[in-house]
Amino acid sequence: MFPFQRTVILLFPLACLIISTSSRNTYKVIPIVTSVELRDNLKYLNSSATIHNTSTESKVDLAITVTRPLPDPWMNFVVWIDLASGTLQTPLQNTTFDFCEFLKNPGLHRIGQILHREVKRNGNIPNCPIGPGLYKFCGISTAAMRLPSFIPVASYIMHVFVGIGNEIVYDSRWHGSLKRVKCTSSMRC
Ligand SMILES: *[C@@H]1O[C@H](CO)[C@@H](O)[C@H](O)[C@H]1NC(C)=O
Ligand SMILES: *[C@@H]1O[C@H](CO)[C@@H](O)[C@H](O)[C@H]1NC(C)=O
Ligand SMILES: *[C@@H]1O[C@H](CO)[C@@H](O)[C@H](O)[C@H]1NC(C)=O
Image (cartoon, rainbow, N blue to C red; front, side):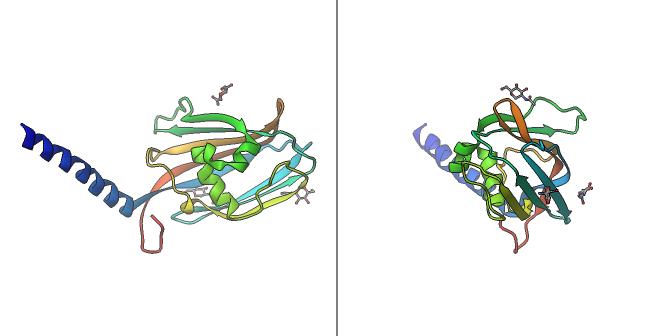
């Protein structure tokens, strides 16, 4: 009885380790952006976004001209994954949080942190209090984003809203699909 149990306990973690290491090294899940809709609240800002596609990723250029201060902004982040049913189900994620707290500590939000890291690398992400100015990000790379492995390979919709009080000041709706891409030696996997 005893030796048998000990064998099971030793083998199981070893098997898990081998599986997770090999799958991580062969494929990577990358979000491809197919379209984006922006609905600016012109009282506060105007924005633009351009998508450049390659076969293995999307690069996004994003610019936001803020024309008046944004006191105590909140962010609402909603993600739907459509598992080929054609109908969107309840969101996979729907969170609203203090935007300034998030900018200070992006780790508060798991997917937000992945996006924040890549956005920050490519431009001047604002500090709080957020004042008027041009915030510009060039070549945000979706291939550089390391998504959690629980995300299914399917189409997705992501809404990113920023609001003040009960007013939405920034409204962006991203559509796309997650793609499984074979890792090459030049890629971080
Ligand atoms: C990006 O590629 C997708 C297909 O992967 C296509 O549907 C979409 O129209 C492309 N978008 C742009 C802006 O090139
Ligand atoms: C916002 O509008 C101003 C004035 O029309 C323009 O100069 C600026 O480029 C726009 N900003 C963005 C990010 O498109
Ligand atoms: C997200 O949650 C809030 C309340 O927590 C709700 O009012 C809102 O409708 C939800 N959004 C979506 C898209 O389900």
